[in-house]
Image (tube, rainbow, N blue to C red; front, side):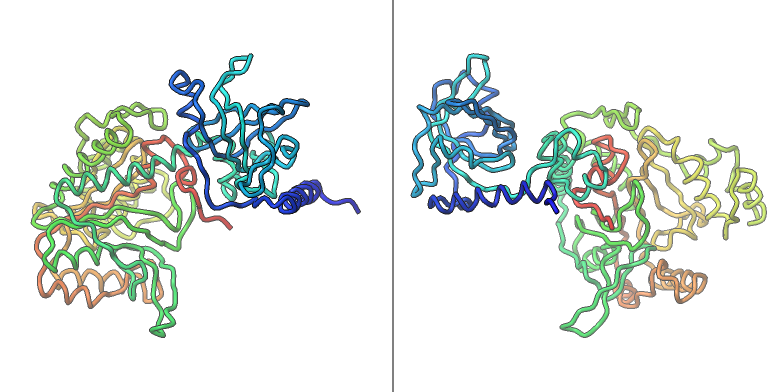
Amino acid sequence: MSKAPITELRDARLRKLEKLRELGVNPYPSTTNRTHRAGTIVSDYEAHEGRKVTVAGRIMSWRSHGALSFGRLQDPSGSIQLYMRRDTVENTRPEEGTLGYKQLKLFDVGDFAEATGEVTKTKRGEISVLVQRIRMLTKSLRPLPDKWSGLKDPELLLRRRYLDTTFDPDNRAPFEAVSRILHALRGFLHERGYVECLTPVIQPQYGGGNARPFRTYVNALSCNMYLAISHELYLKRMIAAGFEKVYTIGRYFRNEGIDRTHQPEFSMLETMTAFQDYRYNMDLLEQLFRHVAQEAFGKTVFTIRGHEIDFAKPFKRISMVKAVREATGIDFSSLSSLEEANQHLETLGFSEPAESIGEALVRVLEERVQETLIQPTLVYGHPAEVSPLAKPMDSDPRYSERFELFIAGLETSENWSEQNDPLRLLQTWKEKREAAGADDEEVQPLDYDFIEVLEYGMPPTTGLGPGIERMAMIFTDRDNIDDVVFFPMIR
């Protein structure tokens, strides 16, 4: 039985690896002598013409024509041609790791190499390094997939993202954007006096939201624990401890569904600000998005899901009741019974009845209104019964001091004035737990330790919670969260 092609190709590379070692050449040296990057040379040829340089990177193409050989070397800055002539490439020197012209056949596409030579142009005008010395930096044992047909499978792209970004360096852009966003977020908050806090990912009790947790076991303590679904309750502890402005950029784990906007593991910025309410955070969040747009991307106007979005313009602010009324003609604030609310749901095409008027309002917003919120819109006044951690509004306790930011139909941030009345919060938690049942893991358990913190006293506080991946999706105009997560969770 003949070997599979990949096996034959790998065996051929293994033989070349063995030949390198027989020559006394280390095929995996630990250091390089690189002096210049490929992109720098190509973009400013005049400044480098005739200069001796050393470049290093991955070989993306390789061909020989008797006394001449050519390679395309790629590094993170770009690519440059290696121009090799039999009469200019120095002989093999095992002690230095260099290979002579006759040994160039030991190189393959995918190998990492270091080349030293003079910057020049070929007769065809190709900017090149006329190679004098060449070293193997890493021998690749597996051939790269065919560029035109080997990376079409979406699942293959997710599992072997490194191959995708190797073939097309432009595909690194969304992941580099995430890094710039994180840097901009930290700069924005530090300028305003916020202290970054390290909060635990492994927690004895999950809380800060409604989500099914991931369980784990700590051997040293012989007890079950949970991966964080939120860091909110720990940041509030920091506020109770005397800090006034705190934040964390952390990892979050919610053992729930996977779709185009959700991954079970994701990142989020959470802030807590003492002596302020949700209106302060409306201003802060608007300023934050504007700062990230300018600082991380150098502009304020973006095309997002086919719409032109200008972050320099003031964000629209509207109550949830009004947003739903304008879109559907239904004024949920005037309804007096759950039966009436469910009749409206049925009219709108909902098959399942709601358990409260507030729940009905939220469902209409999410399924009938959200997609129409194109320009940055702050929707506030969520029903109190779906906002256990938020303070009710003094003007109408049916609604809470809570808001969400929507951009191009995507929800990007959950924010509210924190409930710091320990007795009210405990009662709300108990009611939620009793209504849901003891086995419902999506409803957060009673956290008596946090209630004890509040009983010692926490000042008026408000928090922000924009998702990092959602921000990246918006600013890079991606429809799927997998496009901005380098290592998405897949089976």
